[in-house]
Figure 1 (cartoon, rainbow over the protein chains, first blue to last red):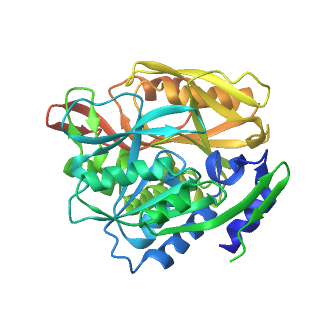
Figure 2: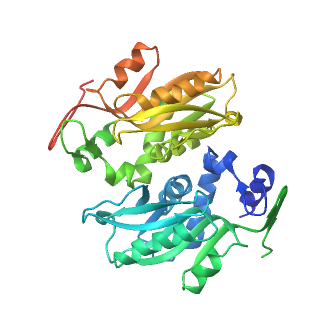
Figure 3: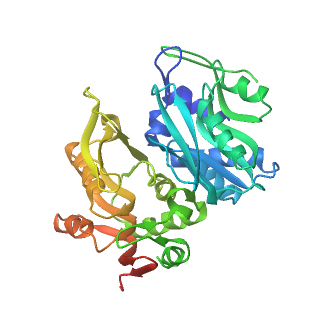
Length: 191
Length: 191
């Protein structure tokens, strides 16, 4: 997605070989019009994938996902990050490790919001090691539903997440694929 | 807002005298079209308030706020909930008590995203005791900026938040004002 790549080059800040800050338009500051355009791109790519619901992970995935859900005219569910296990039968839960924050959290989905007929599009802001996406996949599959695809705003292609998801058979569509980071350096995969 | 009141009556679940669950369309499940309509309502009310930026609090405020920011054509900032103090000079931080979760968190704003000329519209999903709104106000005013108004999706009018904010001189516009809750009972303020 050209507008997103240009925005990353203009306003993104590469701190070192792994950290790309996009605080000014995606994570802290949010550019609502860019979020709408991101939704348009995801719709264009996934509209013939038989998607029945869109899932995202709180909280930076919410803005692009609500714009996608509106344009695809589909229900959306925000998977919640809980700090502790919920000990009742009403939810699916799985432990996810966050490399960024060096902690674990319990990704949580109410059983009410999924059925085995669902085909779920998972959208998230970043794909690096793939831990969050894998957690979302586990919840979808535990419910007997199918993953229709994974939509990523910014992929760090030099980290293992994409390759691991592809090898497991999932379709990954990333709007910006970053091939290299370093202090002041941002490069994209040439496609 | 009639469509919102009807949705609360249809899909909201009052558990007791204080807890209203709106998981199915606002907090966990998200109805993107309803979020858009909420944005339209906030725009209609606040468009002549000289607003320069819209702030919300992660994470349930994000979906209605991004829809408002798009329609008002304004920048948006998501105030982050951190579990610990950030000890550098780049952020404004204030401690907020959450009655719902019985914990404190550090509401955080990068200094880059506010200036003293700003007039900030604060949008949040719920107003009960007003702790989160007051925290956001403290951050805005610490930066020397002005609060242009407070937009709330669902107000629990029987709790002290609204009255406290009004007494302090802030303008509060709530799309649904719940006057009474009890197991299976949801009533609205007659206006």
